[in-house]
Image (cartoon, rainbow, N blue to C red; front, side, top):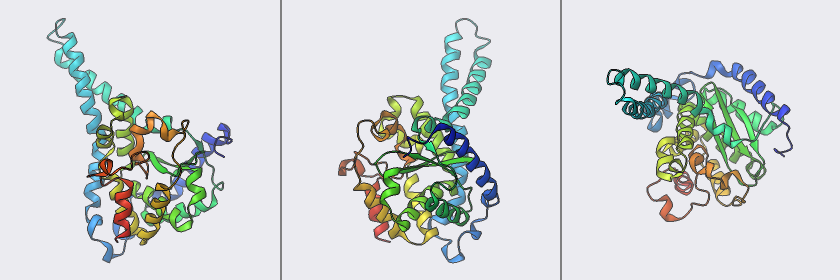
Length: 307
């Protein structure tokens, strides 16, 4: 389905969708919390939402500067025998240049390796209706959509604050009913509400740059953001008020087909990007893998079923 979608229908259509629908929903982007939740819901994770948003907003630039400092020190130390006077200015220049390069590349890195075909407005009417309604409920911009032709059941969100993109698989769309799909889309939009889309994309982009090191679970998870999926589940179910829908979707996702050899979810890139997706636990469903990991799919499903 997705593979047969042409590029001409892809990128330009996706951009039109994002720009056109984005402008319609810009007025929702910074809506006060009280406008999206009744007063009796202002407890639990909602009381921390502003702190979480501020932390997620600051993190990318601090990470870019941190990486820049490392490269700046290395570059300055290499040039130290040549000129001691230039040590500090050179280090500062390299730091700022590397931080600037990373800020331009890292958030878009996941989109470049995930691929897929952009979807125009009207091609997925069931998703369009849900996204429009949920975007208003969450007070966020309506994201663009990319679809992967893959029987694996998964979905994620990446991009920056002004151009978020949801990626869904054909396997997910064909297997979920309306309530389950609402739960999945609510989870993805909760990342927007938490200002976690750019933070997660920046961290995943840095993990990609680190190559084999960034494919290690501990490194990729820390860079992308620990507990980000758990927090998104909390905000999602408080907004739609039906945790069983998301729990049922996660169960179907867990019981879905495993990725084939040519699947993106079997590639080395997915190891660095897995925490951008609602199911990061593909091929990693053993008890040893999920101990202490609140983002593991089975842990989150069990917690939702207890609500």
